[in-house]
Image (cartoon, rainbow, N blue to C red; front, side):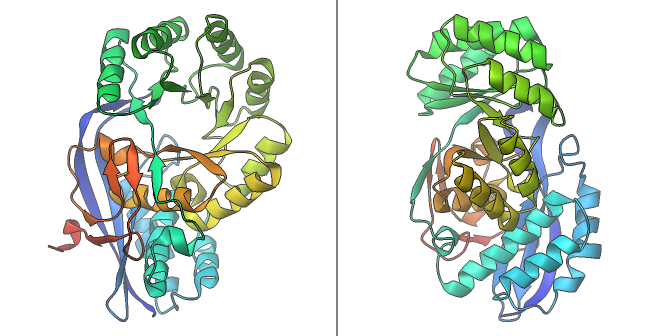
Length: 362
């Protein structure tokens, strides 16, 4: 089975409600999707969100990277030559990790199809179900409490609370949500690089002193402030999760060896896809550092790829794969079943997705 054609298209899916973080506000998933067609007619799918504030990529740059630099040298390569394909892909250009991720997951989709198994089983996993959290966008406190209670009614037991804009107000938001949802619901706090190191220590310590239990605090300081992350991690009891600070396996080694965080958040759009994400998993396993699998504003294609990785690797103990739950519709056929907090893995080969309408498939 050889790669015969690589195509890109654009998908636009409205969100149920606007997605608000300390970095941006978005009202739809407007991503680039990839279809790789093999010489026997089988297809594999991938997806890349334009997240300029994190990866530096736009829709235009993603399509250009794939069409002009990544795709040409891959045409004609054997799908079974997975390692060779990935070396060519990652040497095609530097950075552009989301563009690489979209092609990477489409290749893995086809590779698993050639094996006749779901991708997570090809990767060595057997976990048929995953539990995800749900993101609560940063808003006025009353609205965040309302959104949190709605999520609980929908069956979510883990909430990811977006903060990072206003220190004292962030404390009030988290306190109000904890009082509203009760002690049994896990709260993950995501500052999206919004605090200084000193503010992060002050805010987290204050919440701890108030008896507010938190599962973790994600990326409290700037992505490049390793010393600040290290300070926060050393001064608080709540586990600190490194997100934007970890794009590569080398970043993971740096964070772990410096003890700058307790946990690592893997996102395919940061690593450049599954191939490099597996390296981060291996490093984390060596150091016994647990990982979370996350997503950006992605639809079912990319989130399905992340779910397959999570189902395959035991070191991934937490999932933030709520992208499909944030979308107002699902334009695709097949793949894992996203049922609120539960993600049920597909039994069909590959990612399990078999129809993507933007490519004219009906």
